[in-house]
Image (cartoon, rainbow over all chains, first blue to last red; front, side, top):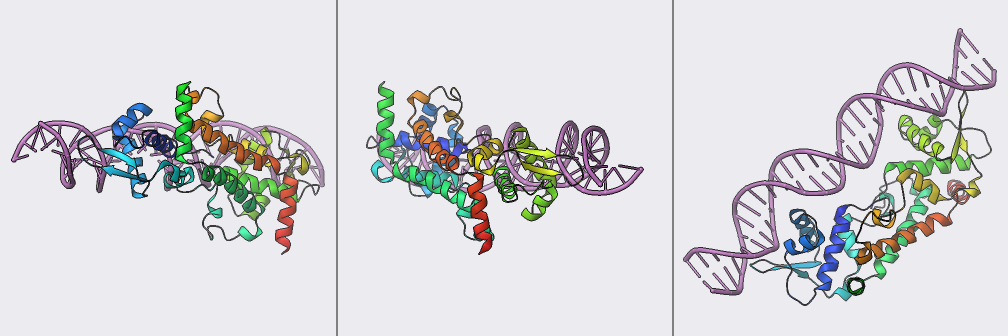
Length: 140
Length: 140
DNA sequence: ATTCTTCCTATAGTTTTAGTAGAAAGAAAG
DNA sequence: CTTTCTTTCTACTAAAACTATAGGAAGAAT
């Protein structure tokens, strides 16, 4: 029931971009240094986020990445979905047809409720809110 | 963000035991057959559930497993915790000290909220309710 | 003594995770 | 037009986790 580093690193990187939104592009190396993770690895995650349309790249000296939209318009559910594939605890609540017994399985209903609970939280939070929270915490 | 088969199989097996609660012990082989999974593998999960005190074993011919308590007194959160280790999406919301930056990390608060949302659902459902739901669904 | 079962330990194949490596391509800036 | 800093792409790999499988010992009723 754990998230992988993809989700963890990716969310933190997106928050970083949100905090510096409007201040020009941020290179992966700088983000990775700040987060204390491998820049080469973070590269892959940024690629996924870019292909999903959440960030845009500026490919040149002193380039880097910026958010594709305003932080207010990016919900955490989007970020997690890109990096983790989905927010479902089991496949059968996502892919209809992943389990042909769903109609007779009480567990299916339970996982569905769990998924909805997680999704509600992630859907209710924007990167802008995360960015503000981050700035507050840093200030202390 | 997926659960492993431990959590999935284990929950279904526990529901099975709840449905047949009071009807004597159920051998692993029968449960596995019904669930269409490997009995040898389910063995391991039952061992974990037994050591956690959720089920009791009767070791003899025509023995098997029974719930250690009434289905009304077993919450799904307990089952998932035994099998998956915890209900946390990341370690830092479980182990205080797994991350020394928690006080400065906005992501930490997000994961905390996600965990609480999941936990609320799993804590609110008992095996008895699952068993009833299962019987209803089967009836249709 | 037989039978059916749990219980214990060891092993192993496969998949996923979490990276590392190296080089090509883009574009401003000098 | 070359340098510089960056993204971008593909391939590779070590380690861990997952998903089992195997074989037999131990228990207790019958």
